[in-house]
Image (cartoon, rainbow, N blue to C red; front, side, top):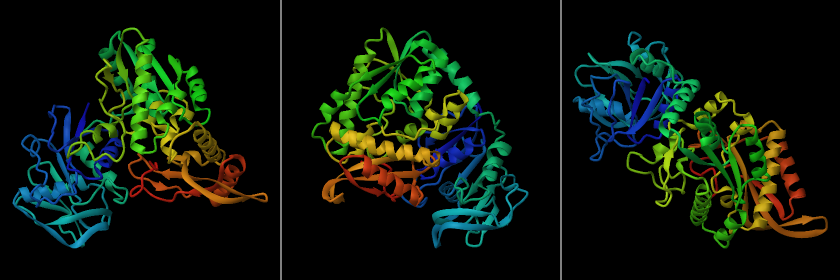
Length: 508
């Protein structure tokens, strides 16, 4: 399969470059700049990402270009462009004018293959503290802005191109054109990376890898585990054994509803009621990270016990997706832990199972496209993401069955309200938080002193960044009124208008 390799120098936009290239139906992979993979004949080109570093810094990232520059088409973005200029003998200095935000190209070499179809005045997005002051000999300018003379260049005699702006962000209005020029016209990649081709290739690989062995997979009702299960089922049929654990922290009626949804999908699924076991280990635990670890350990214990009932199971199926893989092998090692999350490739020693992760090369939006291609119902494919620890991390105190019940009722009113108002599919993720706060209220002629809940709804593409959803006031008023009237123990409703960053989507 034709492949583009992206070398990551730590830019916040690196994953976005990959997603934009894949939108061209061209496969690409992200690798740390200091862990360059073997460049097989399938690799048709390389992209250098941006970076928070200055190329003049003592600890600046330095890639090994011996098998890349002059041998494969190369597109260097932002830091990559500055590094290449300095490497060639040019001069890179701290910008005299801050170069962040929108700019317009006032010079374009229309004959250059990278700039084909990019119009004069095209808006681009700058985000760099250094700039190229002098280009090395043999480097030819291909575009400029008013403040950045060398906004783009090509090394003469090579298919090596560089730009100081970010074509991958939507503020660069002709960025897709530029990326198409590179991956399709310059690298000559076939545009055959499609959901259908992914399914065909993956099913074949799964059959070859798993053979006649049994696979056990934990279903959550979420998009990733569902698509992983259907792919595995398509490949190996009833060799796949799915386990759906009710940890008592799911949404209202979710355990029964999800099992019902799976019935007509031909999946071999067993439901396990382990609510009381989870409530027991969570009793009195208030610290978020301890909650997550207690839930994770208990889930593994329950899952392991069930897996051992499946004779001769050899493989553990997981719904790991590409951002999880990238996160586990970042430029400076695993990224700082904000919260315990996907443990890519991590299993307790006592679980003697080999891992199979059919979705580990896909982004979330690609998982959904594959799911639709597989014919999975929209009610499952379109589900909002839901945290692995469930409602435990939306209860900002110790977890009790009573608190879970209150939050399930609040959450149900909110989510069903979004569906009824036609707003559910416009929101990336929504839910409710039960706060460790009592507030005074008046119901009838009596004063109340009851709980406060916060509603949260965000818009996003992949969850890495998110903005709060501007839901209609009349909708919010209706939902708030319904929650207070119907959920005993709640007398005040708030709405979270924080974006990520600096906030996170979940509160714990």
